[in-house]
Amino acid sequence: MNQKEKWAVIRTFSKEYLRGKKKQRTELLNRLGYVTGYSRKHLMEILVYPPARKPIRRRRSSCYQVVFPLLEKLWVISNYACGQRLVPMIPVYLESLTCHGEMKVGKRKKALLLRISSATADRLLVSERKRIALKGRSRTKPGTLLKHQIPIRTWADWDNTVPGFLEIDSVHHCGDSPSGEYIHTLDTTDVASGWNECRGHLGRSERETTGALEVIRQRLPFPLRGIDFDTGGEFVNYHLIRYCEEHKITYTRARETIKNDQPYIEQQNYSVVRRFVGYQRLDTREQLVILNQLYEKLSDYQNFFQPVMRLKDKIRDGARVTRRYGQPKTAYQRLLEREDTPEETKSELRERFLTLNPRKLLLEITRSGRKLTKR
Image (cartoon, rainbow, N blue to C red):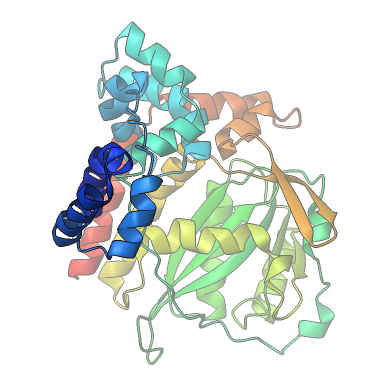
């Protein structure tokens, strides 16, 4: 007999116990003690004041249950984004997927999807959500050459910038062993718009790093005006200084061991590179080709279909810190909203957006990631 059944028995015989005489109460206590296992003293107390029956609460079914299959599909296409990042992108995903014939949505279901809140989306998806938290080790070692000759720029200096100033970092694909030569990823993100570009290169030589930066510079939809990096030896060298002087690129570095000086790129190292490529060792030319093909698709997926939340202000009241974030937007949306973005660039971005299918991009990225694992 479980606890719920015991309480039901006590409530049933409570009135009989209160109305009964001494002999009847004694017999009732003996029987209930045998059935429930309670002591006589305890039974004498709870029969006088029996536990109240809890009201039956029936959960009302949500009107959004009818669109759950569609919401789940959009959630997968968004790469399992949280509700705050998923909901603002639902109109964009619906437009793109409908245009490419990937999804058919009726008027009623479309209206429900467009008015759903982020909290409701998270509540509906809570049973399906699975998070994988992998932690890797940093392989970047500080370079001492020229370090004190390069000006320092902190996170506070990035306010009101125009597109073209990038934070850059190197991601190592060495697996569990840093020995030998292996592939690195040059990860870059634009501070003003959030535009992200990655490029793989074999080894961490000055020439390979500069070559990867040149490919990224050609792919950016705006001129490269400046780079900011940590004190890694692959960045602190004469070769990169000459490259920046030749192309008139501002050359600054963050303070050593202080990651808050590069908040934009630090969050991208996991959410972009590690999330899609993982932590396995990559050390062959064949893998490098596959990795750069993945990054070409990932550039379109990340910049056109993955919104980024930016911190608007931070209010400190004693030990309590309140952070307020702006509306999640993609890099593509931020560039279209900027008045300093040329109309020609905006037209090119709009035409490029119309050719992109987020579901197809994600499938191609996933396939490339599986090829890397098999090699």
